[in-house]
Amino acid sequence: MSENSTIRALLDSAGLHEPGTDAARVIVHGNRVIGSRLVRGLEVDARETADGIEADISVRGGVRIETPIHMCFGMLPETGKQHIVLRVRMGKGAAASILAHCVFPNALDITHSMDAEIEVGDGADYSYFERHVHGREGGVLVLPKARVRVGENARFKTEFELIKGRVGRIDVDYETHVGPRGVLEMIARISGRGDDRIRISETGILDGEGSRGVLKSHIALRDRARAEIHNRLVANAAHARGHVDCKEIVQDEAAASAIPIVEVNHPKAHVTHEASIGSVDSKQLETLMARGLTEDDAVERIIRGLLG
Amino acid sequence: MRAEEKPIGSGRLEVRDLSMTLGGKPVLQHVTIDFWPGHVHALIGPNGAGKSTLASTIMGLAGYQDYEGDVLLDGESLREVPVDERARRGITLGWQEPARFEGLLVRDYILAGAKNGSDEKVRDALLRVGLDPERYASRAVDKTLSGGERKRIELASILAMKPRIVLMDEPDSGIDVDALNRIFDAIRDLKARGATVILITHSLTVLKQAEHAFLFCNGKLIDKGSIDRIGRYFENQCLPCDHQDGRESPFPVRES
Image (cartoon, rainbow over all chains, first blue to last red; front, side):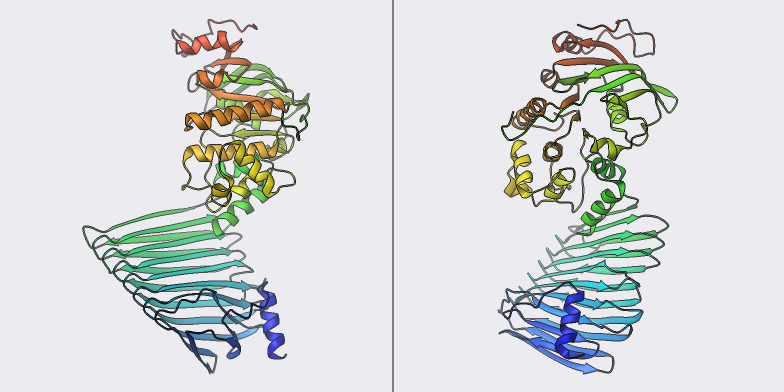
């Protein structure tokens, strides 16, 4: 298959069209970079490795890239490994967002792992949206790991979303340290079914005075799927504020556990948490059914809202 | 009546000798009421009188399906009809405390029960309850909305559904004066379109929107008639009341 055909197949699987020519992009199939386009101020140095790629991505200080940078990591074969090593540097006052699609439409036995180091410089703004598109078989082991430093007055937002196709097994491990008046937001939205296994471990350390952080995990499980959520938010400085929010809807024989840990090490810091696990809320369900939706449609709409 | 809307047709609801026991306690006792299309009815009475229980039973909610007697819509029993099918036949309920839905957008909520949903329908429904569509259509029906805003959005979803029977539990709860007038406009609009409107209330202001009043106490319908006469019980806060302890009602059920 030619590189252009592979790009088209990956984008089609993700339900995407070719991005406009003004958007930066990097497309990786297995261990090959098969498409890239850069814009001013964005530097990408990607090297192929035996089972993936190693990439340094940086945005120069003061450069604000308005159009999201599109990245696509994927594999079309049924089996294989893809290991991504990513180092991201956002210079002082830089701004960029990355929309990453991880596409494994035919997977039967694929391991997709990522080791990321992310440095968000003072005053910088970096968003990373990772959307996974898997096939129906759930034969993917997903192992994303990231260590993030957010500078003074900087902002880091990450969203992990896997709501199309089967999860397979996923083990998210993110840890972020936030500097003075920095802002952190980590969101995971995952829908599991069959015998999917989901583990999320997210840690936010609010080291800087006036820093803020939100950890949010919204999970919907059906069939025999299992989920285990460990969200930990630590406030170490004055006026640090944080919130942990775990919500899981469990149906059929699925099971879930949520362990929100909040730790406050300064008398002027404040962290809250909420966690709920259970079936679909009966009042929500009856409200929508009292408008004429069938039970299945009402459940679908409630779950779509939670994951949306 | 709004020029573009046609009457929504029949919607005669009959409650026949309805009795229900919950947790060993009789919560409805031999209640018989006729509700008429194009009329506004009010169920009044103290807390625990059975008003909301009757509404939940008419709607067919879970936990309110085991009863004696019957509920009929246009002469047909609803006993075996589940809540969603009742809604598709034109019955709907507005809750005293509307549900919150994380992530569900106002526009999607409003269109949940609407046929041929469109942005225009969302806009129209929000304007009718006095909410700016530009500000509200794309918000989530979650805790960022006040109770009063959710109440109005719930009413908007009812209006978009164009129901034949509307049960509204405490329509004034959490609502400011200006918004309450919008809600009363909407009730009049539903009536003009021929809907059967049933209000559950403790409020004389809400009671005045109705044409027929039904006084409940201790699971029993103890009086029915004009709002002026029935309202007088409530002006005196139903006192003296000597039927809370389960004794027979001192008031004969009568028409006026």
